[in-house]
Image (tube, rainbow, N blue to C red; front, side, top):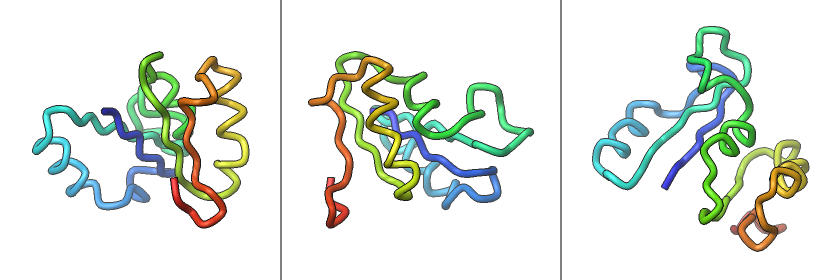
Amino acid sequence: MTLVVGARTFADLYDPVTLDKLQQAHHWLTIVPAFSHDPCAEPVERGDAPTIALDHHRPDQDVYVCGPPPMLAGARLRLLAAGVPADRIHLPDAQGRL
């Protein structure tokens, strides 16, 4: 499982210590940060969360997206355009449930 966590900069990343502990505790979990506005980020970490997620996506994986409404608005279309099948894309419903 790959979890892409987006933030503008490293300083904006929510609880990086706990994210690291989670990854260390679970061999099946890979956490990938996505920094949309951090010039010091590694090249593979630079970009918005949907872009970075597509870089790590495999055809047999489902994609679950959560985040602010502006990001969600375009995420489904971007994923479909990138070739992710509609039945593998999961976004929150009106009540915020996936």
